[in-house]
Length: 340
Figure 1 (tube, rainbow, N blue to C red):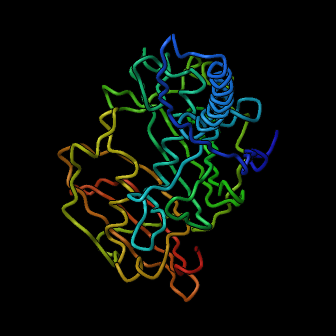
Figure 2 (cartoon, rainbow, N blue to C red):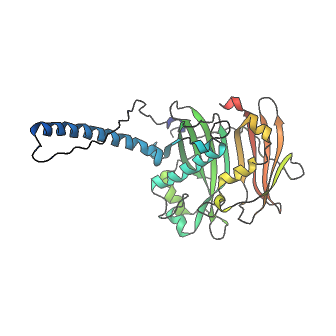
Figure 3 (cartoon, helix red, strand yellow):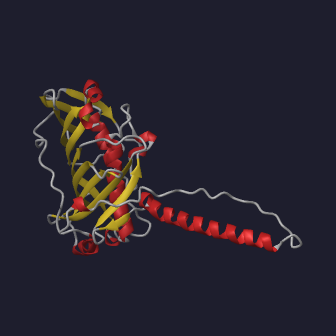
């Protein structure tokens, strides 16, 4: 099995973009001479060449819009430009922006393979649609070595594989398009849930058969356990808390499910500001236990596990007012200059 590290795309850095100027030419049948005809032929030839170059550029730009499949069609690659509204106070992309890239590329992976059901998004296949099944995120681990800046172009690579009897693994690598350096890596597990009953469902043979031609046999990404597994943080042992958190209409996705990025933003609400000002999130390990709805009221809890000049580790818990756990996890923070 080929390593994911071999999936880097090769781009022509010397590609020149030519501007085609619109030329208005007015002539009558009486003034249309042989000389003018020759000029028009030359103009037509130059315009045709320019149009061919523009078509080539357009084909390359598809990597930004729909991406492409590599590694025998098992790995999906997409290019993205860091936008101004995706950066934070340090002019670097936020963790929420990177998480959105992961989600978007996973969906586009299903779209480009043609396995998604008509009229459906968020990775719902035809067999899943018949049984009202949707994907929900069960666990996520991400490690960020360097955050890209505004206008940087990143390449997102993603692939999927079977994980246990009822899970689907999805991994990602985010690279600097110009240098090929790895910026971030992530691994996750998705499970099936019935959209109507909101209960988890078994991974049926028909759904598995749909996905099989597009899945690797196993994960090719190995992330070390950089941060320890969550322990038993609760309201009594938390160092920091943020209460009265509520989802809004804009927090729901097409499956009437609170977007995964929103959960992460809620978790970060209880991280002390001095830490976020001088440190950057390096690693995150999350376990999703239960979903919330529009009427939910949540609280975000955090506790410092270790703290020194090189790193700070926090434990997190997102729970409902009745005490039911929504998300449990850990984060590791490093001085902001270490991740620039």
